[in-house]
Image (cartoon, rainbow, N blue to C red; front, side):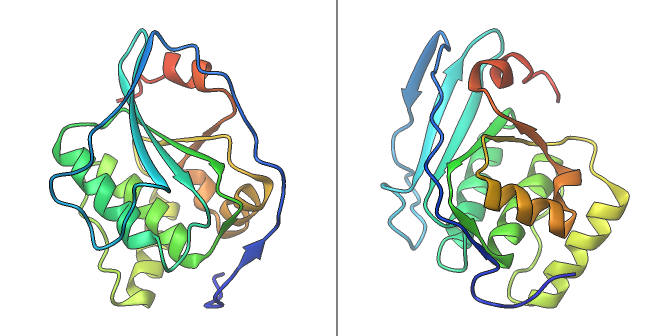
Length: 179
């Protein structure tokens, strides 16, 4: 099950890189409604224009209690802008905690048209993660090139059942027609 430790998994590994062959990549201007965190350095949104246009949400650094709320807020903002063809780039996320798993779970719920879980009640969020994992969600968001420690956390928690893990951006862009 889940543990409430500050760090579930911590492995320092080299960052994976991948070439971008999309027709056009552009960085989106910062949000008009910024979250309480300065996300400029570690949370980047890019539009990719291939056969099917989509959005890449690149997260840099640990996905933990200090960052999960900003990730959820950014995904809510993207979904409100009808950006549901979302690829989450985890190639620069060396560690993920339970809070990070809650952020990814909320991402999956929001893309599927469900409301975000109430994160102030930690156990409630964990129970909803379990229910969604058991029932499944129709749309599996795409996680790009997660580090081994993140894959381990997703697999160990069972959250890997809610996502499609992809290793290559070009291939992932070509498979965006999932929704």
